[in-house]
Each structure stands twice: as C-alpha cells, then as structure tokens.
Amino acid sequence: MTYQQVLIAIILLITIGLFIWGKYRHDIVAAFSLGCCILTGLVPSDLAFAGFGHPAVITVAAVLVISDVMRRCGVVDLIAQALMPYTKNLLVHILLLTAVVTIASSFMNNVGALALMLPVAITTCAKHNRSPAILLMPLAFGSILGGMTTAIGTPPNIIIAMMRAEVSGEAFSMFDFSPVGVWIAIAGVLFIGLIGWRFIPKARSNRSAPEQLFAIGDYLTEVIISEKSELVGQSADAIKGLEKGSIEVAGIAHRHGETMSMKRYQRLKAGDILILQADPSEVQSLLDNNDLELITSADKKFAELTQGDLTLVEGVIKRGSCLEGRGVPYLRRRSNSSLALVGLAREGRRVQRRIRRQTFKAGDILLLQGSAESVDEQLSDLGLVPLAERNLTLGGPRKVTMALSIFAVAVALGVLKILPLAIVFVLAVMVYVLLELIPVRNLYDAIDWPVIILLASLIPVGKALEDTGLTTLVANQLLIVTQGLPIYIIIGLLLVMTMWLSDVINNAATAVVMAPLAYSISQGLGMNADPFFMTVAVGASCAFMTPIGHQSNTLVMGPGGYQFGDYWRMGLPLDIIIVLLAVPLIMMAWPL
Image (cartoon, rainbow, N blue to C red; front, side):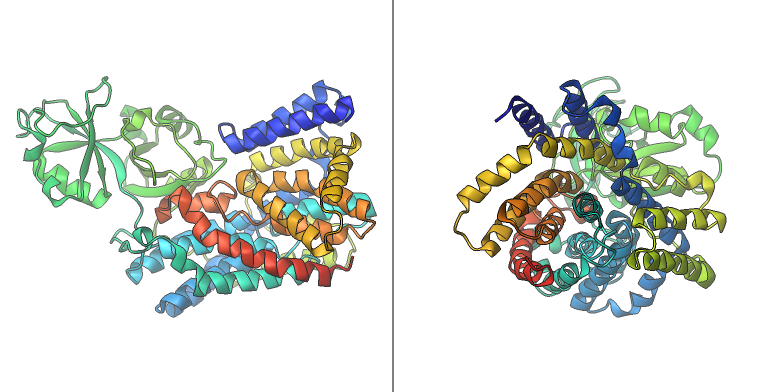
C-alpha cells in the first residue's frame, strides 16, 4: 500500500467508527472526514466544496422540496382518506397502509411519506382498538422498500445514478431501478402484511390502543407537593391513585437538588417534586385527588405569549432535529418561550433524571403545551413529527391535480432524457413557487440540511478513495479471496456487505463508500458495472435490522414502543428474502 492509501484507509475507518458510535451527527462526522482529507492533501483545497454542486446533492434537495409540496397539497392525505373505510380487517389494514406508504415513497422522500402516514396509522389503530406497534414498523419498512423502486425514491439511488454518469457518461434514468426494486417492494410488502408483523414481540403488539389516540410508552412528568396538600408529612403510600399500578414514582427531588429513588416509607415535604412514569390521562386524576401541581418548562414569558386557547400536542423528534442533543433551555430559546414541555417519553430506557436535565434524543416523544394557532408550525420548525389527530390537509382537487401534473411532466422530461433529473426537478420547484403551491418563506424548510452536508462532504472523500487506488486494491483482494466462485455468489456477498454497513451507518454514506468499490470489482472481473451498481443501490436501502440505520426506523421507535432488539426479528427474514430475490433479478435485468 502507498502512503496515500494508508492515509485514506485510516480516515475511512475512523469515519465508519464514528458513524457506528453515534455520539456525533452524521453530517458532523462527514465534514470531519472531508477536513482530514483536505489537511492531508488527499482532496485538493480548490475541490473541497465541489460536492455542493454535484448533481446528486442538487437532486436530493429538490426532491425534498417536491415532497413538501405534495404534503401541503394533500396528495397522500387524499389517498389515506379514501382507504379509511377498508381498515376494519387487521391484515387489510396493515397491507393497505404499508402499500400506500411504499408507493408514496417511490416518488417522494421516504421519511416524509412516513411522517404523513403516522397520524393516519395511529388514528385508525385507536379507532379499531389495535396497538400502533402492529402497524408502525411495517410502515417504516414499507417506506424504505418504496425508495428502491425509482431513481428519486431514496438518496442512495440518486448517488448511484450520478456515479454511473461519471464512469459511463450516462446516469441511470428514473425507472431503471424499477425492474429490480418493484418486485422487491411487492414481495416485501406481502411478507410484511401477511407474515412479518407477527414477528413483532407480543409485549409490544398486545398493548391496547388508549383513548387519546396512541399507545406510546408512559411519559416522564413532574408534580410538586403544595404546602396545602394533605400529603405533607405522609408516606408515598398515601398518594391516591398509585394503588392502581398504572402510575409509578420514578424518583423524588427538590427544586435544586439531585433526583433520588423514592423509598416506600419516606415522608413527603412541601416542595418535594415527584417524578412520575405515567400516561398523561392518568396524571390529571392524580393531580385532582391529591392537591398536586403539574410542573412544566413554562416561564412568565410563556403566559404572556400564549394568551387564548392552549393545546397539548405530542411530537416525536426526528433524526437531525435541532433539538437532538439539546435540552429544555434550548427548547425555550428556540420557541421564544412560547412552548412548554409537559412530559417526555423515551421507549426502552428507564428515565429518572428531572425533565429539565434531560438531553433530547432522536425518537423521544415530547408532550408540549402551546398556542393552538401556532403550535403546528412550531413543531415543523423544531423537527418534530406530530402524533395527534389532525384534520386532513386537503388542498382541494385543483391543487392536487396541479402538483401531480407538474411532477409528471418533470418525470417525463427526465425519463425521455430531454434534461437531466437534477435540472428537471429544480425547474419543477421553480414552477411550484411561481404557482404559489409552496410559500417562498418555507421553500428551504423541507430540505434535510444534515443529509445535504453529509453528501456534499463525502462525495470528495469517495473520489479520493478512487484517486488513491484504494478501491482498486481492496477490490483486487476481494477477487483473490472469491476466485473461482460463481458470479452470483460474488454479487450476493457484495449485497450482504452493503446491507450490513447500511444497518450501522447512514444509507447515503454507505452508497458513497460502496459504489466505488463495486465499480472496481466489476472492472477487475471485466464485466458490466451496472449490476454491481444496482447491487449497492439495493443493499444501501436495506436498513431493516436496527433503529439507527434509517430515519424511518428511528421515527417509529417511540410511538410504537419498540426496543433496539425488536427490529431484527422482522428485518432479518426480510433481508434474507431480498437477497434471494435481488441477486437473480439483478442478473436478469442487467446482463453481465
């Protein structure tokens, strides 16, 4: 190995290690990796920001804006409303909603499609007294499957399409992914709807749907014992309502003291703060029966800003949200004190620290109080997905038709290769703005900037992998190890390697790392690169084994009440099915 190959290998291993560790956001890790490559001379300084102008990055940003337009016009809501009457039967319920999110994810950002369907799924579960856990993981997996079917369904496909253009002069077109992706999606949806959901642990799927819409885990809330309370001087056994077992005292604290475990015969004092694990509907009766006061993060400014109707809303923190890694003080500053945190739910982990000392994580569910007029917009600004019953945001037939027609024209221009996909989708966004289908002030709100930074940073790093010859070196070593094996075994191994990497790091990062390797393997074998690119595209989208591999999995973890180890139960058999199906499909659709 040359000196440069050793350098880029060390940087790559450190980058993957930081991705797996998860302490720092993916975009921060990617920027660090790019910085190391620049400082070591592996990436010329004049090309450091070339990634921001890469067609893949432009296409991802444009697709995110188009997805937001579809949401605003109510395209998915219209479909969901039409399907509502057919959700009485459990199997039909799972199959229908999973199919809808799968189809929607083919033409819009898969996380956006899932976010649109979450309230629909939770509301219908409550209506039929079913646990959301039965439906939410299938929806998350469906959104990932749908992304495989088109060039714009998921960032890995966009990256692969553009990398093919770099080596052959022509990118994959809009539906080049469909001969493989559509059959995988159909098989995946059928497996999920008929068999897969049964692998969800019974502890999660047997939960009954509560009256307030969804069966999430108990919230962490805080109440304070007032001076007039009859509980002063008594033990915790005197608290009316604890005997039912639905409310648990997780700890006790003073205003500025540390949280301690609650001892059974400990005497209560005025000013003691009880930290409760409970459903919000149970807390109210506890307050009424014991002269307790609910503690929120509200301050004096909150009362001034929220005069009028107040409402409680629940939202799950998306990966990449501005709240991730921050706490109550930041929430107060960001909302200008117009939102008050009432409760926090974090599935799979016992929470004992006080709410104001918590650090928010992706997948946490926040119970917030704010003005009914502005709370929806605030949730969007904070990167929270609302988990509440909502009126369907139908833009009317005219807006729906207009949005779909413009999108169809853009797709047609791309498919006919009149213009590149990056150009046609940017033009589509411009038309949406001119027709006021999206307000100019909200034009950039839907763009997932951490993903943009990640892609723009890793594209030059991926180029450095090729320029140093490291991908060729690794490919040659793999070919030596697999010498004499049938080609379908080599493609299967490449697929499994990509799947594994996608489960532990971001799927876009997986595509950037594995695509150059796939190309080098194809050149070493003297074969067409297309089936190898397609193998990476499929594998990078197969993040079914963990909640951290894909944002869709993280998004449903809290609302579904899932734990880390729940995902592989349905994800592993789904991965096996995809491997068995994808390898022959790739070899038939893309001759070697």
